[in-house]
Image (cartoon, rainbow, N blue to C red):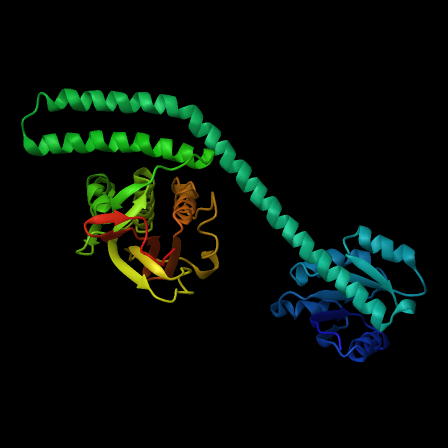
Length: 385
């Protein structure tokens, strides 16, 4: 028995051809599902059937209809059946887009399955190559963005220095505490913007991070002054942080960049306003958690939730891809979530997203904890990753 599960479409007006193909499949004791259509009009009625592993097509002039058959079967591989040793028709069909041809005079169990295997494998390889091509194009785009960012960094830093100088000038002449606090927030935002540009360049150039001991709760609280001005009048930023410190060993600039990107993503998801909630807690996994993608150990969990429209299910696998954005017309770059994903993976952590259309989205980070013993903090708890 040939251990292969096949979804086969056969398009031919001749019942004897259909019976010959069916007999070969049955003689090989293959696990298959065969759909026979007399012509393309019957294939149109099958559009909901989806993609087939292989489509066999027998017609007087198959090359005129191969492209249409591919569209109707969502890009399924097509093998043209010829008769009487007509290699000219078979080669013409390949030139018109068919994957292979098989003459009925040579039809047997072996020839049929050899053709099927070659066709299915070729389609798999072509799909893989197409995916690699897309990855290469994305990498080239990222490289171009990196070069542009590198060229702009010098001018950007000069602007930041100007902002810092004016902030220092104003602080010396203003005594009102609230105004001084606002000026300091502007100065801090300018400095952090400069640091984020450096961090982005480091990410593109794959520079080494400088991890230090951090309380992630403190990182979140220190960034309030930067996050709150980003909120519209209809937005609310709520913190639900754990009472105990969340010790981690990370590069601070990276940690702040992740927080900023997730918060901005949540705010942008609710142009009409809404609630952004940031939560932290400690999680101890004894036997690992397959669903969260983490082995056993101690983790800091950071959750950023919004009550926006949510993410459509078909977009769930794309949101972390570089340059993918659903808000290109609103200035979205598609770099925020891809950067979050890359940085958290670099921390040996993980990012999970859950979303219900119409009810909101939650991004959950799992970050390996540092551990405290006798007042000292180490890298990880004994026995954990």
